[in-house]
Amino acid sequence: MRYRKKPTVVEAFQLTQEVAEAWFLDGEPVPMLCEISMLGSFNKKERKVHEAYIQIPGKLFNEPTRIDLGDWVIRDENGKTSGCDNETFLATYEPMPDYDV
Image (cartoon, rainbow, N blue to C red; front, side):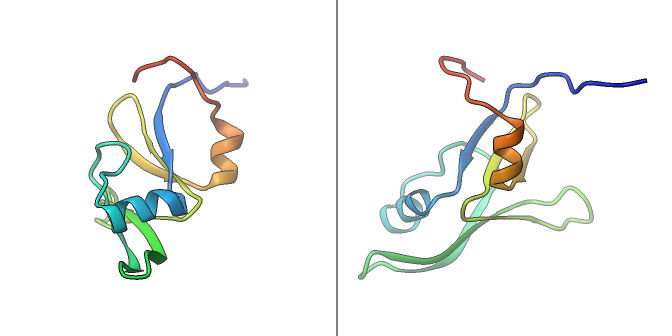
């Protein structure tokens, strides 16, 4: 027997250099409210982010999930937050204009 994945709607943002700079250098909030920590190294004087990544608290063995630049942070319909690499995200999801989660 074959199965097809049911369509789901998620809220997501991509961790880009611009998002990291806004977070570290300008103190802007992460694009969506969730339990995450953004870590990395930066120089405020030069306005340069050298490295950035996000950690999502782990549900399995308390190990956090690491999301690097270019990856996506996803929050599903149940409020569960997870990470996804860019290639998988683009193959799995498509934008839904004018939709509120």
